[in-house]
Amino acid sequence: MAVNRAKQSSPLLDLVGNTPLIEVPVFQKEFPRSSVYAKLESMNPGGSIKDRSVSRMLRDAQADGLLHDNKIVLDSSSGNAGIAYAMFASALGHKVKIVIPDNASAERRQRLEAHGAEIILTDGVLGYDEALLEVRRMYEGNPDIYFFADQYSNESNWLAHYETTAQEILSQAPKTFSYFVSGIGTGGTITGVGRRLREERPDVQIVAAIPPEFPGVEGLKPLGADHINPAIFDRSVVDKWIEIDIDASRSISFALARIGIFSGQSSGAYMYVVRQILEQDPEAHVVTVFPDAGDRYFSVGLWEP
Ligand SMILES: Cc1ncc(COP(=O)(O)O)c(C=O)c1O
Image (cartoon, rainbow, N blue to C red; front, side, top):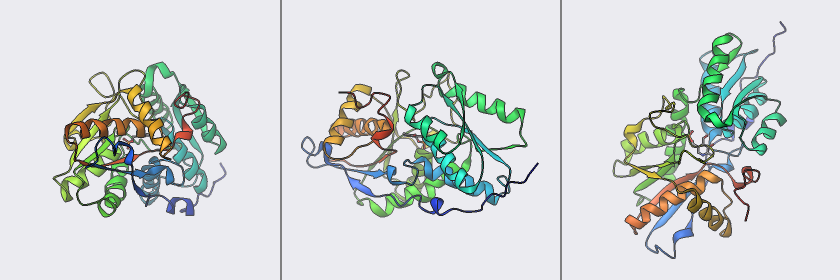
């Protein structure tokens, strides 16, 4: 077999992180003594927060000798991680295979294909869990040809957020902030940021946004006894769990757009949770993340009037 010489680095990977933290004054009239800040993760080169974990997983795998030359990068993804794998791995000269539920948005699927990734579709009705089971079957059937990144179990995922996202929040946010809000896809964001805040700002409450089983929120995973729970997700960092109301979150997405912030579905959901916090604690200062931008959600109807 011809050896495909992979690259060790790409300037694209160096562009990840250092995203802006901006004030989001959408609830300012109702709660004038509060403040809300969000990190605009759509400013990453692949357009989402997953650039952080994926670039870190690829770099660590190179350093550990797991990702080299002919290895095919393999994982399951709700979409954003898939885009990050496809973009960075093709920049490094690797082939990519992504297992994805067949109801993932057309924008995401087309982006994967544009980068030359091979898409393996699983039944969307069976959810993310089926994509996860399928990717494990693929890997076990042919372990030598793949670097199986396994973002749900890969320690480099949460470490990316511990070392970058959390570090940036600590240096960018006003010292008065006392809540951090995030949801759980792989749990990388909330585990990494949560662990770092536990160490350096133990007074900050970590609040988890929980999606309803149906219709769900793209990027967020239903948890609970009858679902696969991500191995890297550290539940002990969570102080409070708040359930997402999909319709109210969508209204907030529109309200954000009206003040110039065009964010994705999970960002609106996180802001719904922020609002619940402000109702209990009207003078709270809250930090959250906006994982991606609104233009990944036209085909799933987020912006239909
Ligand atoms: C849009 C969106 N929001 C939130 C998340 C959750 O992030 P994490 O995997 O770090 O828990 C993801 C992850 O895929 C995502 O794509």
